[in-house]
Length: 402
Image 1 (spheres, rainbow, N blue to C red):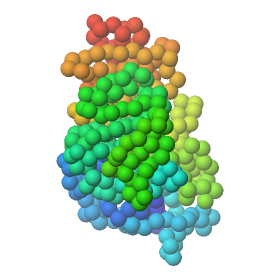
Image 2 (cartoon, one colour; image 1 turned 135 degrees about the vertical axis):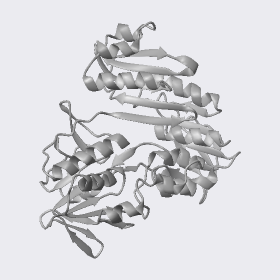
Image 3 (cartoon, helix red, strand yellow; image 1 turned 180 degrees about the vertical axis):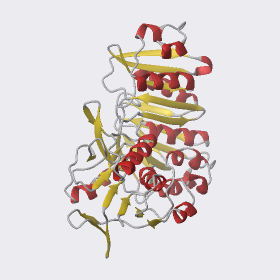
Image 4 (tube, rainbow, N blue to C red; image 1 turned 45 degrees about the vertical axis):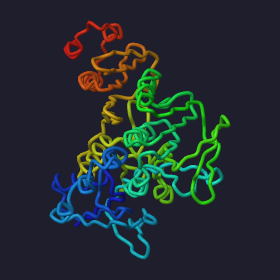
């Protein structure tokens, strides 16, 4: 009887083991996670969970009984130290487990501030896992002053929660504008206006010089020389893929654990899925940090472990919740040269990205109809002319029939 071990009990790992069983795999399955909690959703951590609007149990992807009933062995709160690809074993301390197929769903890790500028002071937090959310939650008290370092989606979501709970919020972004790495200036403008209307002090083109405090952070000195008195700090300056295990096992690394179109790494019996994996996409190689990708890619890996021989065809989409605005993103905007903005009712807006005449992506802010139309167009390989999308009289639904 074969044994599949999945390392990483996040969205990708949990999706992989569930798919194996639903596809009829009758061998042994072991899911190993370094956190003690059952596999859970991460997106609500920086939103509803931190706001106190979601209980812990609602975070869990499945109840413990699911794993028991499906004969999936959970090893939670345990860390894999190494992989021996020749012997096909993984080591957890003094324990060694044999595998026939191994899936690495090791996710990603937040970047931290250097110790030299105060990154290890108390009350300096990152926002990545349940422990992070639980540690910072007591500090979200009305009247406290939080400094958010980083103007990407994680930083903006944390700022939205803090402002909603009555905190004083200062957000600093070293780049010229918030969301500069991931969105057009028009989307940045939308969210800058949104946050400013809720009292968030956004400072762009301003970095953090250093934090102040003996053991606990009490203030910050910014790159423009200004000084702030703060109660705590949230750091959202990006993530790095979890590749250390793969590196030690001498697997190929290329902006993540390199896989082929089936999800197989450079070792024939080791697979990878989720934030940690890079894969072929339209003649290039990409790595996607999203829940939909983690689920879809992990399910394809499960099918291929069972011999399906199926290519993973990514359909990139993302979302972010800030205040009463839901941002939905379809496609990837890399390489765009034209941006078209469509304004809707009650502050809704969509931003359409083109490269020449090719539609690449859509950002939709409280515009679910535009999002769904854009998503379907991109997935079908259809590109309505920029002129039609720009025209406010265009019946957008009709674009799907063109």
